[in-house]
Length: 373
Ligand code: ATP
Image 1 (cartoon, protein in one colour):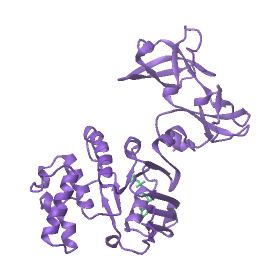
Image 2 (cartoon, rainbow, N blue to C red):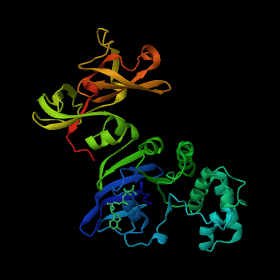
Image 3 (cartoon, rainbow, N blue to C red):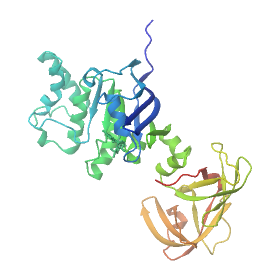
Image 4 (cartoon, rainbow, N blue to C red):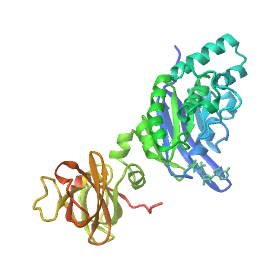
């Protein structure tokens, strides 16, 4: 009986040093077959270094990398069944689309009839069946992206690595390509590993995302898990928008407690089962804007909201965003708090108005304090 590997890529304790500097620090993760996996982190956190080790351009100082269940340590890039799409795409400008895609197949010694069949098949799968004769400069930015992917996919890689391929595109095309890339990954059913510092790209496209910080993975999870159940202050701050306060725990019963912020404000939080805090410890509290409700200061009550946290302030500005608006409220001590309001009932709040911000301690996520990067 054959033992089909469940994972296309397995990394165990992968470490890379440049002199005394450790760029990747013992990273371990497995990527299930046929999934879209992103590595998301700020500039300089080690994403490209990790990717280069997977591709074989660099070797780790320690740890193991397996592709389809077999270690590839010591295997040169051209002998690993891994292909890579770069930000600059690296299409050959002197060749037409057909020749760009056929190039890798020609290098394998395949006969012309089979090459033709394979190239046509891949052009159809990227929904550009008729562009084979076009020159590269005759393609739109989005078409070039698809051809760069087709050129890799025609070689049927086990894993496709994508190093910020949307970085050079304008905003509108980038938005469209996010959806397109996800559809292409489904179409080919091949594992895509996508590295980016742009959270909106990673969250939209990925089945799973690893959040990388200073050479380490802080958390791996679905986009929903990372957004709703971040495990560290870094993840809470990096994924999605949030209001953040630092403070000291004044009382805690294991499931929640009270914090005094560095500005001297009392604040309640719920540990929500993923983090327990001791009295006296330094913490960071995060509250997403959509969980902060804004009511006029003159209104009594909390509008039916379990509002054990309240703060008064003055509307600084309103950012219209279609179905809802973001209200920026200046608190008494000068902080700017972000709150999302839906249009119904609140759309007439104006800058300069006195308001009360209300949120439940259940929506206040509490983590061990981290200095901001
Ligand atoms: P970006 O998003 O800006 O591309 P990144 O997350 O991909 O960043 P890397 O390029 O992997 O980060 O770099 C990680 C760290 O390792 C950085 O501090 C970088 O300066 C350092 N580094 C990378 N390559 C080398 C090298 N060849 N020699 C020395 N230091 C290096």
